[in-house]
Length: 255
Image (cartoon, rainbow, N blue to C red):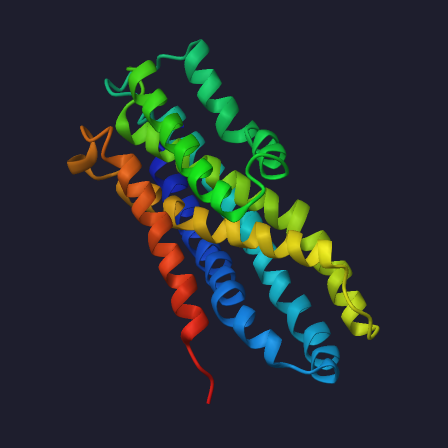
């Protein structure tokens, strides 16, 4: 396994970046371009454009999400678990708390789904509650699991968000959009609850993507390795930057 690990790492990383570009690029298209364009269409135009455009776009969107998540999980398994990069001293230290971290990363999506249906249901609660919970998890990993290095803690925040985002695409956004597109094709008004669900989860994904990309790019940076309490500030800056992009998108005019 050690002999082929560098090759697997290269292949999985390549797939991860290609799939991620496809997924996140379309995510930004939906949230910053199509969200401003769609309301300008009249009913007849929507009936013609939406059933032709969105199914094609959502195909690449959801499979981009799938392969980004699969290749990311494989990368963590090969590089951080087998390659032991998640440990400060390069030796495995599996125990109760590391397994708790693993469970939160890949199973915490069920808790996320419950929270956004209840206490984090409003945009303000999702913004501040999401930031506080994410920051708290990172500090917990660094302070309570000392064997887990900075890289291991940060990449598991990114993987957790990637899992949340992929779940949203396949289990919330795509099922809702299928019904929305069908209603528009039939000349009917789509269910407002479905529109709110798809739009809300897509917005969550957009905010999370800023932290996800930060985690992916900065888990290699030694400059941040001792900055446990600076990283939450970086998460907040990422959320604020996404908020700025939303405001800017609403101001971009057509011809």
